[in-house]
Amino acid sequence: MKINFIILLNIFALVACASTNNPVISGADWGLVDSKPVYLFTLANSNGVTAKITNYGGIVVEFNAPDRNGYMENIVLGLGTLDDYLAGHPAFGYIVGRYINRIGGAKFTLEGTEYVLATNSLGKHNIHGGRRNFSSKVWDATTSSNEQSATLSLSYISADMEEGYPGNLTVKVDYVLNNDNELQIHYTATTDKPTVLNLSNHSYFNLTNCKENVLGHQVIIYADTYTPVDNELIPTGEIVQVEGTPYDLRQWTVINDRLTDLPKGYDNNFCIKGTSGRPALAAEMYESKSGRLLQTYTTEPGLGFYTAYGLNGRNKSPQGVAYTSSMGACFEAQHYPDSPNKPNFPSTTLKPGETYTQLTIYKVGVRP
Image 1: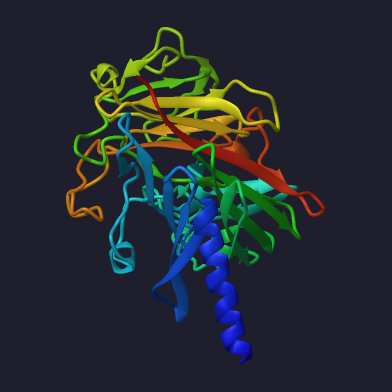
Image 2 (image 1 turned 180 degrees about the vertical axis):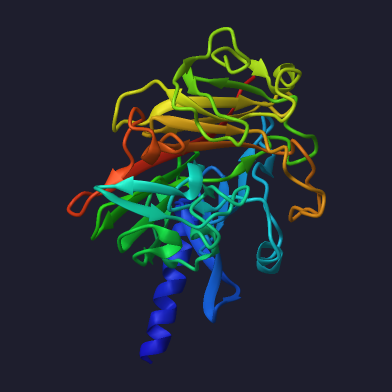
């Protein structure tokens, strides 16, 4: 009788949610990794916008947004099954940790101690946290919803010296889809030993649902300066004005218009104008045929803009579309790359007793 009563309560709760059209979240079995269960969660708001996110790497598998006629389509690059992701992919949609982008020479010195990291970029640098970074972890998951939003909370404990990074790090990432059509990503973390930390999300966006590449998309990035890099994409330590360079994206610019000067596409950190601790509008991307508009807000001082020239045709979306060069653009909220080795860059040091916090918001809408 007790079991039946609980079932009835669940049915009544579902009916109540459906009748009020509140945001909801549901989960489905998606497989196993290292004997741990993997789920695919679907978050839906009251406007019909949905996001599918898995606790394997915190990957955003789909983000379905309306065009100017209200037609919903997926605007992120993703794969159809867990096995597809396990077979390898170019960083589709995952939580990046412990450090987004690159640390030059795969080492840094903190409080007099040198730490040597895993090398996974050109055989000598550390990128996105190392060989078995947060993208390959099965995160613990809990869910909740209310009248305004649906939330997927993921947590993971990264052990001391994992991929060479010091400190037992406790990380929590909340994905919140609200009725303002925002996918908010809240990050918090604590450590028991001084360490460096620079978390982000690595979603590739294409506002045409991959019917076309992103070269015809228009972008604007609210940054007066950027951090130039050497030929191995390690920052030189300079902070340079964008004016007069191909990196001046302060006005609406078609991505393809600058690629004559940037044959490898964009892979750069922009220094965002904003108030520390408060989310600032960092970038916008617009696609004229669909009318879709993507806005990126962040509390971070930097934004990595990447136009995905490295994608290859063997990766296919859930719709069976083969991904090729320039099929996606990333807007990676971040501290500057190689900050632990660049004293003039904003610090990424996290100490015991402190709490790392970060908020990134991807907001979808339309323009006439």
